[in-house]
Image (cartoon, rainbow, N blue to C red; front, top):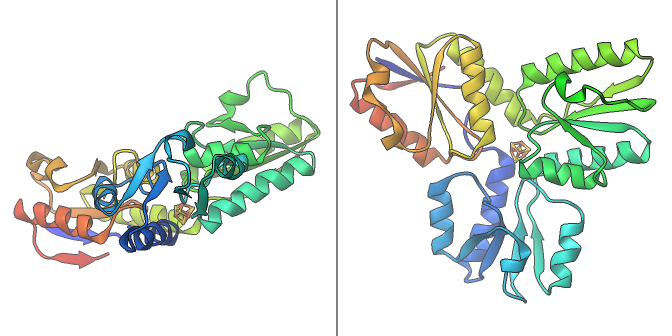
Length: 289
Ligand code: SF4
């Protein structure tokens, strides 16, 4: 067996920068509360918790006078004022590429577009984007979600930063066709971030060259799930694992080449640990794709 790593994988700059900000604060002895997990990776969450960087679900859980950090996924615009009204100090680690999507949502509403967001309505980033649209954006996964919906004169489609590129392209095509047929002005803004595009492209190339793809990332990591999906769309068997113990040796029976990729919130140490366990099943030294 041979192990091949995707040429683009693992930590993105947005997640890395957000972790560094709260890690530096925690290491300096300052307690920080993060609004939701700063990263969908249990190993890092445990490490941060030990240096007093704690995850909370809402600002009400944070002691008055404390520091609260908005994660790289961003938040609705009123969150900062609500936190400050409660006597909290807010640190904003929103990824600049998410800020760009929030700004698009805001600007499009000002320009009287009906805004559609391709993404997961329950994801924190998408909730923030909808918040920046003043609650006016409609979240969709497919054209079926628009059944019975009457568009206004102008419609714009944007995307969650980590969406599946191919699916966004397909949806954009269908939306343009439908809106043009109805005489509606339509605008598509591709807001899928570059690290996501690079990782999805890399895993597709990888999947064509291996027998199985292992995507490493936290169970809650949406972008890791999409890497699995992209590999499967190339016709290759693919699994998501969070840690080495999630691997099953029988996955690798009769397998010659194993591809490895990792989500935007997966640290190198976890990738190395997973790779070492795969190698213990009989794989040879790693090679680059
Ligand atoms: S996945 Fe993209 S948008 Fe999200 S934090 Fe990373 S770089 Fe930023």
